[in-house]
Length: 79
Image (tube, rainbow, N blue to C red):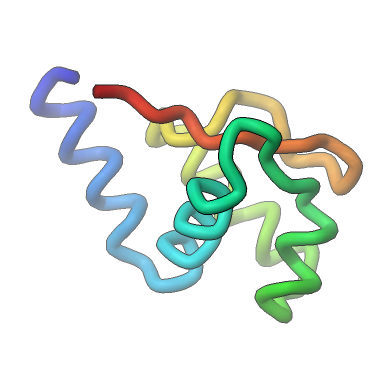
């Protein structure tokens, strides 16, 4: 990863809700979780979760366009 990508990812994870979402997805593994499941487990309103998923996606931590409640979202993990 380039420095600007790392800074973007770290900035996205510097927010507690986004960190909790990303940690949950990493723990779940490649199968991911549906947004509805994430919202329920973290007691987050769907609109709020959608905002945070968008931010994680823009930071390159989630696949783009995966914010629908029925879509399974795996995290993007790079070494």
